[in-house]
Length: 329
Image (cartoon, rainbow, N blue to C red; front, side, top):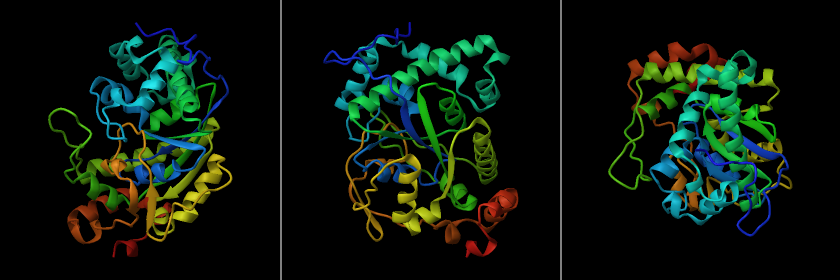
């Protein structure tokens, strides 16, 4: 059974704070720079970058994959303390049941039912149960880290809507976009997942047409967040890489992180400490001085046929985001 989440206490005896949890949620289709942006934001003294919390159950706890600190997640002191504070230990959760709840609640096709739960009362009970668990985790992350803002780079559209419906969570969404051809080129590459602790695994790959469809649907659905009262700010990957200090400063202000702290961002580089991140791009394991560069390898390396397919399928929205045909050269 899922543990009773109403009375979890800190290991040292204090109860979890019931104050609203502030989350800066990075949303958009993957390969749009969310990992590096999240970890740069996470260097702020009042912020913590946690990676993609949506993968905590399967990849973090069930498969015990590596935390961003390079330890298996169940051996990481940070996540151990989070589990103790939220539930009295991760062992108090029935992971199979929690992942079943996740599957019944957190899907793009269920977004209308998230916003209007009375349309499906039985599913609404599942949603309440699942979001109660999420709320306890976010509260525990806040209290263990001491941070005012949690930076979650899950990116999934449905998860953004789910967080927007949780009483006790104050979520703002940074909507990350990147040139559609660059995203498609990246999703076609073979990339190993170094966080796997047993065996070998690779990140999924998609065809240019499939990526185009996902790029369009993800980005269009994120525009609907305004209708549910969720603050949203559009950030282009290209702008973030060309002028990281300015873009990170804007996101810090958007998240309410003041005073601004930008000394760790230089001209073409950023200084990063190790993070306690769940899942994400392999770059989350990079720390120390890390180069910041705009990756446009697709301009020279991508097949012309694939460029045309992606460009034709995505051009209306791509143009709306400020991408032009001449940008492809």
